[in-house]
Image (cartoon, rainbow over all chains, first blue to last red):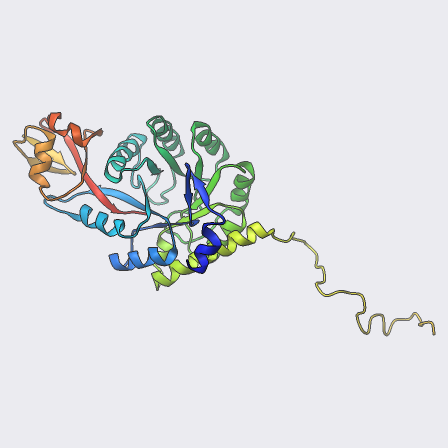
Length: 278
Length: 65
């Protein structure tokens, strides 16, 4: 067991839908320079969950089986997504197909409103979540910081919320920390996972320091100069942020407070007009 | 008849969805299917007929974020 596993895993698991996860980093499997680099990055990250998708199989092709073979060797749990779906119906049908293909009730639910921003269609998201939950799915909704939508999703039965940090693939980090902090405070008992927009380990660390339960990312690792090293960096950052949060961050101040004791400071009051008593 | 498979027109004489999948993807392993936007379980493909103009999706596992 390496240091990261020791710090994160057994002593501080994240439980979602009854499953205890040893890592608070969920990692995507797309956009890597090669399948081997993807596998090496997943191993270096320590992630216990990876996201996957469904795509059209070419005639007489066999790409799906090749990918399944690759992933099965990693010993991780898969979280299929509905990426690319623009309507609730598309997302529902895709989820049904994903469940059969991957043999899991877990679904990362994405209903996309705009192809430039890839922002969630919150109306379609709620509609699809309601149907899928009634069909026995464990829904991981990709959403925004909107509290009313979050309330609807939790009310429907979502045990986890996945608000974006910033638009998918932008690497801009936590665009609206105020709203994310508000969401954390508003849903103290719901697992919150930052999903999308993370670009640097410091972003992931900040999310964890804020009290978020996990971070899901893909491009920040896949498109790094060294994806394997970056995967390790993210794992360490998430551990650092989580440990920082649990340790209790100091209170922020507007004015300075000396960290060195004032009492006994030499030359204190020397040169003042008040004569010292002998 | 002509059906639309994964966005492309395909001429087929397949009598069922299962036969169509077998014709087009004999070595594909696990695939999932939908006809006209409706999911069709693997076990139901043999009983699922296809008609001229049907929109059929045949998908498999892939990388994803």
